[in-house]
Amino acid sequence: MEFGIRILPTGLLSLIKQRGLEEEALESGFSLEICRIPNPNKEWINFEKLIGDDAIGPNWENPRSVYASSKLEGTVEFVKVGNPCVGFKQIPSKLWIRAKPLTMPLISWAISNKIFSCPNGDQRTLHDWFELNSDIPKNKSKVMALPGPSDWNYTFLN
Image (tube, one colour):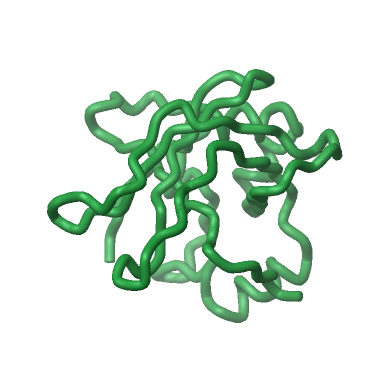
């Protein structure tokens, strides 16, 4: 399945640059953690909802919301994911987000699950799917929307 290149949201780019993760993000990737609960740790940046819709669209489109931080430039769009038949919790008005380098356990998991595999065995970087400083005209590529926070608590690889 081909999705094409997606431009990272400007708010996420600002977060990656603030953390000094540009090179690492392009070479091996990064992890993004999202929390609904305030966190005083300076790594966590508060994003507030600017505009959003909590209702399912007429063609079963998932609700979307746009967030921004007073500490960073740009915005981030989230798409509410989940089963609409069970009912959605509202997308929160505030989220705390942090970007971190990928850890060795995450990289090992990705390799063993063929996340980094490529046709013909070519080595790839995130430049193949994402652009940090895109020269691609905005009408030719789309900004990536992120999945919204889950309706239940969980940990990944813990």
